[in-house]
Image (tube, rainbow, N blue to C red; front, side, top):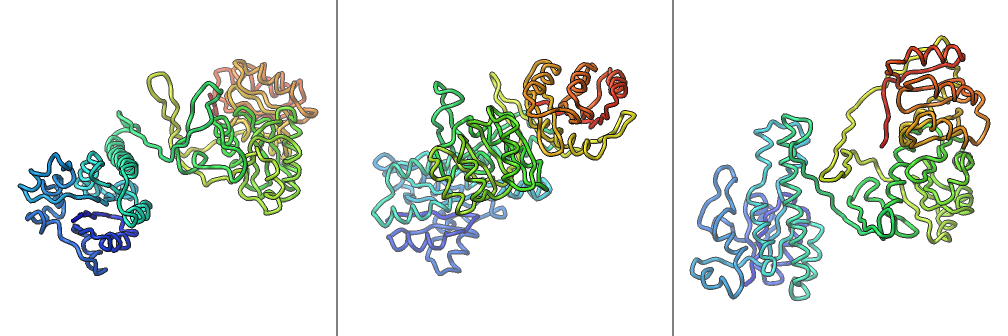
Length: 495
């Protein structure tokens, strides 16, 4: 006789599974809420307390913590048979467990005393015992695997490979569960835990890392990390980085059709348009050389006309909220071009590895405080231009200087050690006259030189965080050059 022990919080699919394993000559043990659900459905089972001879106690805290349960999970065939027979221990061949929902309840603002009751003890103990003994016990912790179990049982048995796969998932689940509890308790008295534990799932190997001699994988089932092409080649390490950067910038623009073109983790062209086609062409023409082999991010549905325009050049990845049927029909001919749907935003801490550890960064809610600090206010045209430049500046590698008009970036200088050099690069790469343009700087200007270079190129308005000990010198220079300048109070370094 084979035995299955069922003990689940999430009862999705449990009745169908129980009925099927009964039909395949298993006996079932259960207790508590799972037992009630089985009884209500007319599924025959043995109460755990009846089997162990020990009642549930302490408001259900102690149910399965018993040698007859754990002996049944840990007993090895042909090694422990005699001791199991001596003590009346039934071998448990199938364990189906999912845990009290600590992760979900920790977001419900419960008191600590109330939340502690959602820390599962018996469940993880059984999962670990059964997973350790996977050669003899199949441990199932995910309702999405129930059909796999049903099919395997109908075909005769759960294979060793399947048991090992289930065991891996089981240990990953208990690791994530303990991590959630540990992190929560540490965060009770500190913004960051002294020991930080994190787990990402849905790992997929990539062809290689930043370069062919490097190995890489992506983990995550939501947000950009979970996005996979609806057509085209497999995503690369660099593709994911560029899509992440491009979508973050694209989300700055809601009201107008917008196009963001990314190359090597920096924007090389950003534009608004009367329609998506107009926005895309305008953004591409900001720097058409750099746009070749780029990642293109669009904030409206891609139709036939946009698809035809994009298909006329080399684009590595195209990202948009949706694609018309005609557009997909055109782009499928570009076999190597990856096409992605923009996923819902996934909020999380930023984690970056360094030698020996990681850096963790969190961005709490904040507000910029825009203040005109020059004698002259920006005109409405200049204000729209500096708003666009500032949005792009926030998502470009430091030091960065962005020139823009009210519809597009005109010149982008990024990733330089000198802010003046960034300005000179932006001017050198400008796609049109900078006369009457606006300029944005991601950090304060420590000297008037960057402003003077921008003014000489034709800029008439500038936005920056402010906060330098030489702010007055920069303000005086702006007034002398008849430039409008706005301080925002917030710096946007990106390393």
